[in-house]
Length: 250
Length: 311
Image 1 (cartoon, each protein chain N blue to C red):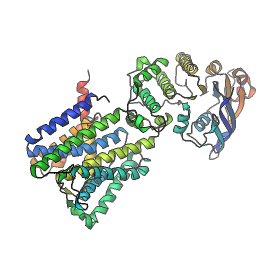
Image 2 (cartoon, chains in turn cyan, brown):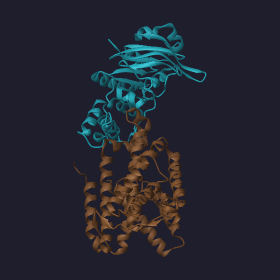
Image 3 (cartoon, chains in turn purple, green):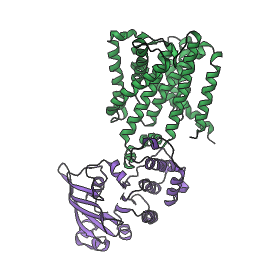
Image 4 (cartoon, each protein chain N blue to C red):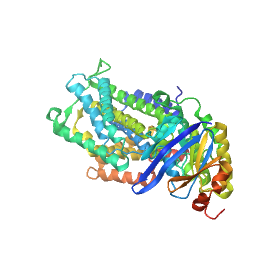
């Protein structure tokens, strides 16, 4: 397998606080990678650096061999790296279908074709219906996004990331705020959609059941460093991971 | 290209207004002229409001449009209505393209106040420019339309017909744009800029584009107003003028391209009657009107139609 995303020597400091300390990662294509760690360990900082929201103090990030360290979030998205958020980022005054239509529209106007962007192309409704079906959101089609239950908001947030057809999907705590009954259902749906489209996934998660069940590799963060990297069973059994991240739960 | 109901209605109303123009009383023509010129300007305000931005200085482009058209007549001796409108639109668009590089970075009150500052800078420049008539401004007299000489009542009707046609075309173009992929991003930006960026679109570029479009509409409205009124002065960029556009924008709502036209018509009607029957307190009448709209129709006049249509 080949690396689709490579982070080399990433460091990020906020004043005296070091949020990323010499992070070196190579993510293989089509893999599902879990990022674990306690709060403030540097997981979200890593995702923010990959997606361009934060620039590393030193180090480089490359995607499919191209250096993306200095690119803006929208440029990185255009290349094929999309993300969801810990707190869902939706268009709250719009309906679910209109939310997705925004993404379909942005895809239709990819690049700088202003003429294509300025007219209706194809039938955007079909593309929206396909995503609604994929994420089982059809029943919420005309519901206002701002009034949806939290689990559905999470799902729509992920669907919005998927609508722009990424090659890498970064999920920031996809099951936080979702009830225990719904979390596997949500992850099953997301993973099914991801596998159908061949997207590489990195997700931040505190729920070790989710991590064990859905990942094929786990990166454990502690104080901005990666303290363990490998198969889920191996990483979750590592002494440092048990001491600093899982505690005595296992 | 398939036209939606709004577009068809716009063309139909425009055609009817032009057809009945010759039989309308003078006051009716005058009221429609002023209202539609304001309506064209407020179309741009509506686009900006949909994008989540309110300009307190949109009079800047209204005035630039008027002066550009007026200067074509005054200095270049090109008193053609279409040329004056084209000159006004182009001048406003060029200035907005330049200022937009700065303004597109700002949001909320910073955008509003910065736009006000630019309009007041122009006001200061114009009042100090003796060659442009200083505070008195100067008269404008369009004498032809598309090269065809017009005068007397023919000139008045030509100006009226052009105003109606421009209002319909501007509203039609904006309606088509708002239905397009990029047009839909206006409300998305208002709701959540971060998400728009993370879906791969440049918020700053879209805001800049919308700012230029809004300015172009204002330039057209300003040039057309100068043709209709026959006079221009720096008051067109003074802050109360921009305040009137904001007033009409809030009164209208952002639900449809028809709304700015109806809002402007209502505003002008109330102002005319209030000034006629209550010359010392007409501002209070407008203030109370605004209060009523904000309390009972926070989505503007157009929300009234939406509520009625809802099951």
